[in-house]
Image (tube, rainbow, N blue to C red):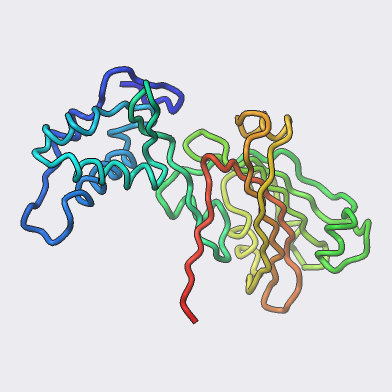
Length: 264
């Protein structure tokens, strides 16, 4: 069975899962949720790779000894999470899961690594350039001030997720000199910054959305005009100095932000 994300298998591929799925009917955990959790686990560990087609709800319910409404609820739970997709004439298939990133002062590299995924980075460019007016204003420096500009392509599971452009000031001692393409292809930017003895303290961040240009779509292997998430962030060290200004784009089909909130 192919594990290529772009491969769609024609025969249902849920038999191994059904043989190993054990339901605890005495548990207070609802049966639909036990089924959904088991299926999500099989998708996460590759037993049900992207493109796998599943039997319909009636057959799955019979094979698991469940009622059809219970099986339907389990499947709908996974559809709502973006793990499965239903299409008329095609059936139910596993889709490429999105990277879900919590909002916090961490880098995408750290978030991917922390979630058990294998991030990879290609440095597209790295070097000194005059800061554009909008970037200079955000960083609180005069326009055309020389800054280090870093552009990277970040991937997970060999699929591109984000193009990241970071502007780093020359006013923080050791920052620009400590960045090399070889180091940045093996480590996250914030990890490198902390390794230089610079303590990240706070950040201002804004999130938006737009459609991809032809070049952005090509780079992220998305259709032209595909939806993109955008993020801009200004990070400060413990002295209140701007450490970096980032302007990133993410493929919305494979990426989302998560935000936890408390009632006031």
